[in-house]
Amino acid sequence: AQTVTQSQPEMSVQEAETVTLSCTYDTSESDYYLFWYKQPPSRQMILVIRQEAYKQQNATENRFSVNFQKAAKSFSLKISDSQLGDAAMYFCAYRRAGYALNFGKGTSLLVTP
Amino acid sequence: DSGVTQTPKHLITATGQRVTLRCSPRSGDLSVYWYQQSLDQGLQFLIQYYNGEERAKGNILERFSAQQFPDLHSELNLSSLELGDSALYFCASSDRVSNQPQHFGDGTRLSIL
Image (cartoon, rainbow over all chains, first blue to last red; front, top):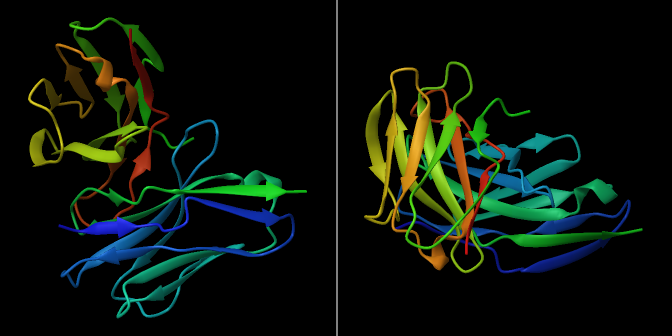
């Protein structure tokens, strides 16, 4: 079974600074996808960024980027120029092609002024 | 707005009762997924439908069932409710079985008294 581990239950960052959230996963599959979802206090699940395992290039979406290390099965999220609106729970998720998402337990991100 | 509509937003009921949660996927999406988010279990996959057919089951209890109708909307039925069933239930949809990201509805908050 695939497992996703987020080892940081809570993280804190100051506005305008950079923070990195960690995620590791375990799989024997070669075709899979990785995602970061954001869940603000409103409880919505918002897709932040996705990475296809077959792509070597790290995905980037504006201030959000990932460091995907396939051999190490590591998928960290970097948030640059942090903003107050980035405060939320962040979930790392793994998905085999055609299957459901497998989530980590989440990292709560606090952004301080 | 993800385009995925879930109703009702909140549901309060008593132990032993039965409820139905409804989900309308994004226009054109054939796959529907149901997830449960509880404090102790985190985000767990329950069941997936693709174009009306059950495709995969996760940690879904026998007291729970679901279906996807010809118009592609889906319903999750929860029966003989227990206190531990209190959770946020999400529906997500994607347009193909394979690699498209899942877009989440706003969830139904179920409270069992």
